[in-house]
Image (cartoon, rainbow, N blue to C red; front, side, top):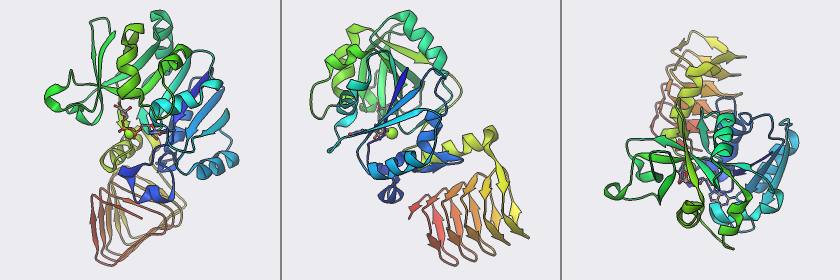
Length: 318
Ligand code: GDD
Ligand code: MG
């Protein structure tokens, strides 16, 4: 079986970090964002097709030097084709039921279960649904009592939203879907889903957690979820009279009389100096937090230096 990961977006909401790397490769706790999806795939998925465009060279480089235990195929779009166009562009690889994912989702959905239910229902597709308080930043789905989707609205106004159930960005499709995707730039959400409702598009609800990691707020939320679920670790660090609070993942970092945590991740080569306070944040490789600086709810790109006494709150710096 095959899985497609839509991985060609420009990651605008994670800029400036995504000026230097595509969103799927932004590290999230223990590995790049996209690897959380790849590692969660059922065993029967032997091939992963990545629909890429923005910074495809970085993705090629990553996958040529990392063995993911599955065949990885990268398919490029010269110009981004939108979510539907990207899917159509990889159709030659897909002649049977397949999974498809937005490349920035982290969730606890049981994919084996979703596949079983999809097969039993026999529709053209299944979409994982998640309930949120404010659905306006997402695809909103209305269903019948038996979870057949009757409405799909991409990013509707609050007063027009059909429900609080949103498209979680995890799908199973039959290849028949391709005959409903036009050529060129096509949005799966705006143009294709509303058109195929009568072909049997079904909802798969689940519990646990779900996050779209494509914004700063949600990224730090995803990080917290993973840290609380067993990814916390302190390894290869020098800890010089520093205070470490709560759950963190600190790797190869020099802690020099600072306060770190909760929910901080650091990557090798970071240095957090005397009197600095870091919480709920991610520091990529070789970041330096100078004396007395405060970093909160933020993502800091590789090699960045937060100057002495500086305060960084709810920000992305690179
Ligand atoms: N190959 C390719 N080409 N991939 C693309 C393109 C493209 O032109 N445009 C977007 N993508 C990829 C992104 O990289 C991302 O992994 C995925 O498609 C979704 O794009 P986002 O830009 O992250 O969309 P969103 O978060 O605003 O909305 C989508 O996700 C929500 C759930 O997180 C929609 O699918 C919503 O309906 C959904 O609720
Ligand atoms: Mg997204």
